[in-house]
Length: 340
Image 1 (cartoon, one colour):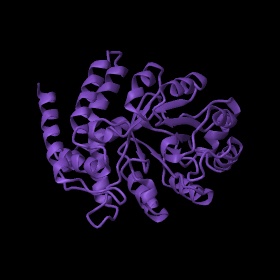
Image 2 (cartoon, one colour):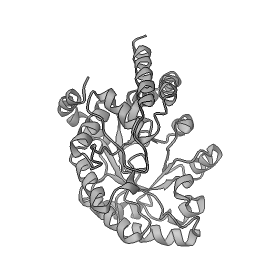
Image 3 (cartoon, one colour):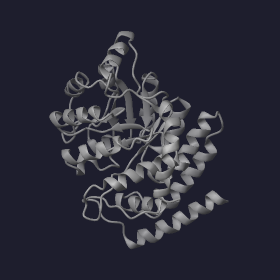
């Protein structure tokens, strides 16, 4: 099926899925937050925790400009493949490579093409004024939640300073907010102490943990069972599901259907390990082609969708001819897996 055909299938599915995945939007968010505060409850930002969000790429054309049309088709493709939600402008979405104005356009495009999916926006920047500006923009355009990377560049700032930074955001933004733990990239970890300092905010929804430290993730889940401690890595997916937590996966870009099968089995109280093994096998086939660079990933996605190639911004290089050949071989083997 091509991406254009996938777009055509969306209309009938929207009404059936919107109610399941609906989350608090901009209108009425403040009253909902106030009610939650009175009850001491946390707003996790979705009807259930165990959902699969795709950490979506952000497509550019060959002139390296954001391509809204391609993004619309990509979102429709993810919906057709079974994604529950989308994280917009995360690390896989190359958020630091886009200006504030461009990030607003990306957000607006996503919000106009939700298709019943739960949409989480990353408004994070190294400075508070732009982070707040982008957060308010996301709220105004109907985002279901935020995933906020801490202010990066200043390596490992004190917890007191991070607490004040995020408190300033929570004081003004009342939709569900998740903190983004990716210390290998940001240089700023999300700590247990920081989360405890912010627990009095009812719209603290949880985190995305993209670090590779399994023991640390286990501690997050144990210490904050009432939040949605989403895993950002496939290696921690079993632990997340076994403890009722969701996932935000870069792998969803190329293995969305396989990931959706994992979650479908989980929700049906079936053994999800078999579809998870298939997902990991498919991932390995493409990993051998160096697919996890942004250029190769977007090229592989375009082949899956049957559409034109989209591009990444520097400093990331274009997909090479050798990678293209390896990716095509991997995709053919993936097709054989699904028909076997």
